Amino acid sequence: MASRMAGDAMLELSELSKHFDGIRAVDGLSLEVERGEVFGLIGPNGSGKSTTVNLVCGVFPATSGRVLLEGKDLGGLPPHRRLNAGISRTFQNIRLFGELTVWQNLWIARRDAPGEEAGFMRNWFGSSARIREAIEETLVFAGLAGRANDLARNLAFGEQRRLELARAVSARPQLILLDEPAAGMNREEVEDLKQRILALKGSGITVLLVEHVMELVMGVTDRVAVLNFGKLIALGAPGEIQGNMAVREAYLGSPDAEAA
Image (cartoon, rainbow, N blue to C red):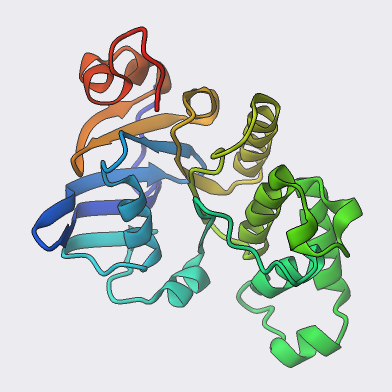
């Protein structure tokens, strides 16, 4: 593996901890996610993966430690400010606006790039061709071009998953956090998701993937970090992680066991 050059870190977690009534959900976690990579974060249930995502997004304040995006400390910033800084996410449980159309879900998530801010009223009433084109491109990416005017609640499960991913993309992020995006998907849908994540990488977006489906993790990630009881127990290329005995014992169980 090529060594990482200084300054390539998109996201840096430095001695990050989160305690809940004495429970150390995340315990002194330090790692770096490189610009443009797909970085996997795995571990058994309760290992601190989703708490880590919520710390990065600002849902939870850190007990101690720092979250840095491109070297800038995000400490104290609320979630909407972190979105503006370039971080978007999906959720374990789908959180769409069910009574709005697919198009409207993407429009609401749309974030102007610096220097392009047109304001809410102008964007809504001005029928910006630039915004229409951007949303249409995102619909094509998500395979939802034919469902633009359908209510989100009327989409099939896999389509709703794709819409949530598309909504995260609509925010024009530098970093997307995917929190178990394959939950509830069949094998065909997982393969489809794999190709869309690789497309995100190809477009230059950095991805932090939290996932239990090992087929997806091992198929898209450049590096994988493994958590157990809030601590980092392994970090390396997917092949290295698969052969790591500490990971097998903590997460995968016996060599013949399937991942949870």
